[in-house]
Length: 311
Image (cartoon, rainbow, N blue to C red; front, top):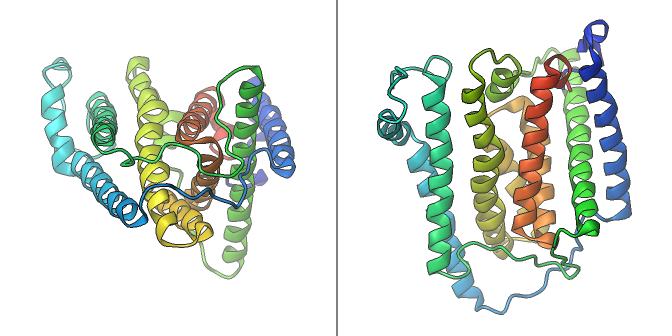
């Protein structure tokens, strides 16, 4: 968030004003849902029946497996291998494996990333089938409540999405204030927008290539990131350290993984809050909320880029 002064008010069109109005409404509704306690979980976690030492060993192995699978598929060598595999399918595009994120053929980059996300999630899900408890899916809070997507549950899900929007807005405002205070002390903090945000906001390539990125951001990323952070890492940390510290540390790890200092606080807050959601509603709800948030962001970056990149 760059602040209100950076918003080009005179150039805003109907989409821009719609973004402001809908975002403000979401923030207010989300704040009310947070205040009412509908978007949080109790501090009491039900005891698990499995043997604690076995459970900790399994979660340690699952954490190491996630790091290994994720690192292998998203390393330079892993991506280069995927490029070679998908080139025959997209042979009418020419690409160089030596290019950077911005210079390589985007169709290959996005396709390789999406395939890597699905492969990583698939491998972990197969391991979960072989070793029950490898991925922790079920809610654990004393007020746990699975969503079955009837009318009441759909409204509850929308309330959770609004709460997420509210928390992201608060975290963005706090970061903006901190950056302004630091600037008055002569410390200019990085304010670079995430690569994917800039790319979508200024996209001028084929729409079908952008659709691959959309699938990666709204399907692949929520799936592998929630399996890894809320399904594996957070339960492992919660077994080893107090729950509050596990929530905070998972959020920080989640924010750091995105590699953007300006977005570190908002993404970390979202990551920590999703741990609370997981305790009450389960991993599936976290995946869905993550996907909704990413899809919502992509939509507004396309519809109202001038305002969506500022807030």
